[in-house]
Image (cartoon, rainbow over all chains, first blue to last red; front, side, top):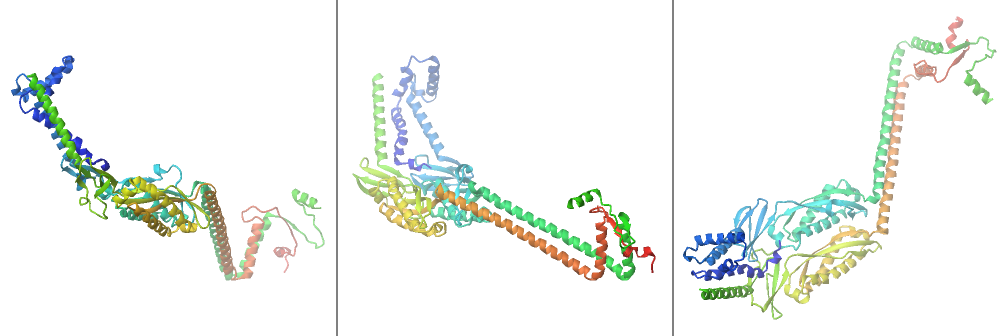
Length: 351
Length: 289
């Protein structure tokens, strides 16, 4: 990512590492002693432990490479081999690259884009010449807006000039590693800003109620499209995988009023339920009574007079059997009616 | 032995210094231009060449990036970003034609397309941004200020942004830059009274909605009840109208039973009945006929 660092100045120090090696090589051509073997001799005062380790190393080196050197240690040769070994390791290390399945390796050769490595073990020229930037392209990144998963409100104006509190996240990955590296100064920040701009533009087109409910999935889709268009316009090399509205609520300041609307909806539904219950009950009662009448009437039609009489007597019988009866013979006699105690009290009060 | 030793070491040191010097000189003859930068070579303060200059839609690997030669210690390289860069505008307060205030955050994306011009007129990217930022702010205020508040929220905003971009681009060209995109990031009501009154409007609108929902619910419920009543009446009439006279009798009998509590329910009150011998029930009591 930090390609801005890889300027030409790097060539100096890197090639410089070869300097002492080159010097050592020319110096160590013959079997003359050279300055590099001085330190072990020049430091007699060292502790036995430190000394013995170095001595051991020198001795082994002498036994291996410095056979001709006789008693004088040919440390130059040793150094030559050491530096050569280091260089070899450096070359191997910087020219082989393990690219994981989800990664791509973008190779720049002396600053210029050379190729993109696919997954697997890949080889390039060693480091100062080829540089490899490994990039996760399959890895889907998630950008939350507002940052940090929604502490505080993220207020937006809707098309009907209402305000909505919206939290959403954008999932994206890298489609084109070269574009991603080379085209945008700060791609990750760009994703966030583009998302915010696209979402606000989209929310400004819909009404509050639509944004909170039915049109959420359409909004998500349209924001995704719009983001993709903008990012493609920047040649960002980014693919927007999805936009998810996590929360679309009225602002905290008016949330009570919104609750009262849903309470009203519940209440209205309750009214309707009650009315329907009443309606069913009444209908059933009417049908029942009508059916009962019809049955009796059918019988009545067969023998009207007798049925009528029978019903009359049966009813009177049951009614009068339960009541106190007074039969008054003479038309002029006013009977004494024994009122019940509380009825008597009522009558007295009225008087 | 010691003599040759000293000589050899001097020789090696000399060679090393020589090698280092050679490397420094050689490396200062070359520079590596990365894909993300444009290199302006300046010789004695006079701009000479531009390497890896921006061209639209170019393929990476075939741009001017790579190793370039230069005269050491004489040619200076000015590095200029080739990528799309971003600058944010400070939050602007915009007054719409209907005197509503809106807080607007916008950003612009640009790239340097003429490094030479940019280097002469501004020097660094940062100074280009500093020069463009107030212009973005003022053109945003001007453009948005020509419109009523509602239009700022409408899709017409796209046209507004295009106007601003065109205007900003004219200035940007003078700095060798090209505006890729201008966008409103946020457009909010300012805190305090405007936001509160918007909240208040929302609140009252909801309350109104709640009431009308309740009233509508009541209305529907009444209609359902009335329909039920009507249907029941229809059912009764259809059945009872077959013989009104018999219905009268039938219903009277039912009514007596209920009134005197003989249908199993509790009677509404205790009853005393005073019967005249003329009563229909007692007709046979007298044994007449």
